[in-house]
Amino acid sequence: MKKYFFIFFISFGLAANNDTNLSNKNILFVGNSYLYYNDSLHNHVKRMAIERFPSYEEKFIYKSSTIGGARSWHHNFKYLLESKNIGVNESFDLLILQGGSAEPLSKNSRVIFKNTVKEVNEIAKEYGTKLALYMTHAYVAPDKRYEANMINKISSMYINAGKENNVKVIPVGIGFENAYKENPNIQLHNLDGTHPSLLGTYLAACIVYGVLYDDSPVGIDYNYFGKVSDQDRIFIQKIAYETITNFQH
Image (cartoon, rainbow, N blue to C red; front, side, top):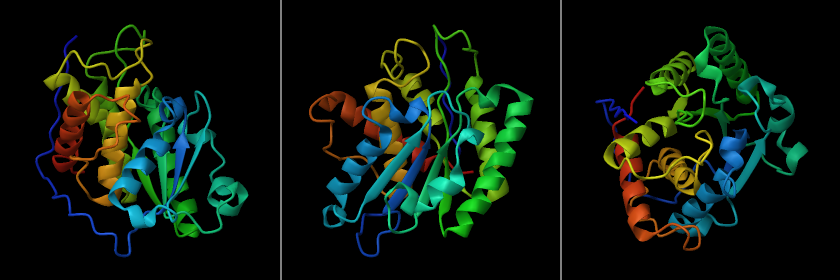
């Protein structure tokens, strides 16, 4: 299967980590099974953050609200952002929104996504919460919805919504393409061709971590309790770093 490599040539440097007044301590992930597969993405990102910022271990509060097969507009954002409803005393610093994987495939759903992002961003502002968009990865075979260059539709939808609302885009989907380009044999997808494998979730976690804390994931020791080999860990961290530093929207 032919893979595609995307580079956005305006890059930003990742800062050396500094836990003084660290932002993004209270984080809410909202999405579907792309987030909750493989012990849930938020758990992996939190473990990486604790490794790099150990003094914040007790201060990090990561929550995840997912609905299987949900699209971006299926969630009750007002309820979730009223953080005490889900056991968090302080408002969330950041809401990470993952849209449904099929949303980029039709004009109608792309319009609904754009309108949803605008609405959610306004709701988030009421609670003093920033919004970030989690760019999903493309399908691969044997998923029947696979199509060549699908990442172009995905990236355009997320980048445009990010620009229109002045919110960050987390380029996970582009990271998948970059990894497959460099190593076509790596298994980032589950056997169904849609959900992430453990390595896919690990790559997503590295990219999310890097964007959240403006810090390179390279050198993180966390390997999901020995489930990710050193070879895969080093390769995936490199791809995540390159994806983040070469992405600008």
